[in-house]
Image (cartoon, rainbow, N blue to C red; front, side, top):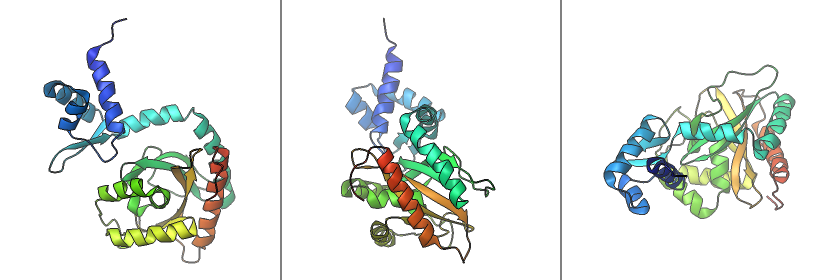
Length: 253
């Protein structure tokens, strides 16, 4: 069977981009795949228009995996063993604590939400399955950052471009680094109304069989001064540990 060369090149480009969460330039794509620049450019522009890759228009344009590609991946993972294990647990937790529960994974310097469970009387949240938010101002993202290996964490921190969403948003690397140390100590992270003024969230890391962070879960609720967020954080951490074991993680965290 004869394979279409353009299709092969397109798949090769997507694979290469997916392996470079920090982004990759057109010149680097051409060099690594030994492609003519005109052919690679046409493919990449088309992928960008379709949302399959995202363009970071800095001094040199860099390409990362786009939201459409993630949504396609989510369609697959919805039928995978991982999601089939996680979703019933998230639904049970949402009912137990009366909060909206998310599971998210790393996407460059952002976190993408791939599962959501709501309680009987859900609160309105702007995040849905497929939403991407910055790692530095979400409990999901901080949990993933804090428990990633040092090299991965350094790579991700270098990608962050701080932007204030509320008056509580962390806007510098030193403050974030100090907070990540606290997260490591506590076992859970907090979004202290950093993304949205009216929302406060807690999150905890989920580990895969290889001991690496594969994502995180979070509990989201309307901010209430009387709420015991440390208790919620401990609940999230306990559930994350249970999920990690269900997914094959045998270590201690």
